[in-house]
Length: 257
Image 1 (cartoon, rainbow, N blue to C red):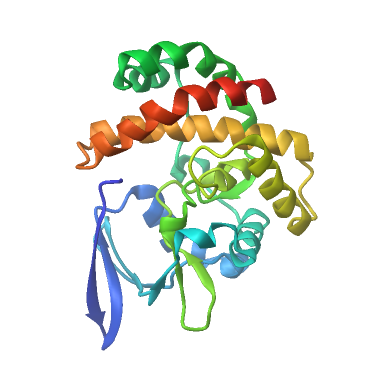
Image 2: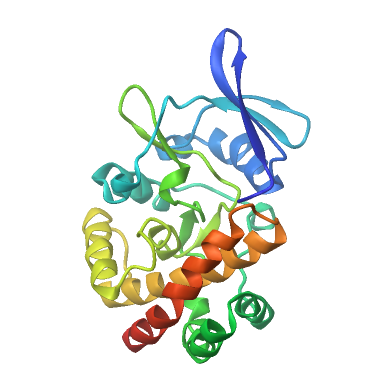
């Protein structure tokens, strides 16, 4: 849903991806972060070349992941390696995590009248916990949804979108992988799997579940606003889904906070 565009090209005789309109954060990730020795444990495409200040040529991934693979052990391991990578970053170059009252009101205004009336009171419950997911615990992709993963011929899973790379709670990377507006039981199961794989994480299971639910709502706000700001062709389709699903999910899930 971002503004960057990609095309398949041949670079030095090998199929590659050319990405234009790349954000400064993603350029920084590929040109600076991934050159650190400890960044080798991060599953990202190899950088082949840069063109100017906003174009990348990166490794072509022959296979995109199916939506059913969102809970794959390969993805969980890749996220753990990212979240525990002992890399150095410049805060000013990272994506800025933020959630304001204005953003929430803007998203609410895009819902239909009935959904807006049913949702408004519950948004505040999640909004009040926003700082728990913005803690700079460690490196995160910021946009780990299943559509941003590919697979090398070796079978290695690779995350290829780094526009929102920053420091934050691992919950921000768990939330987009969970399909739809998952219920607390599904969230708890996935968080438990993640924590079992990340032995260094000190976040308690109950807190990780809460943070993942908060991240779900924040992402919904972000997606609704981005859809309209970018005039996405599928906006009506997505909004019909949000109008139908979001109000009842907020009501039921707010009890878990």
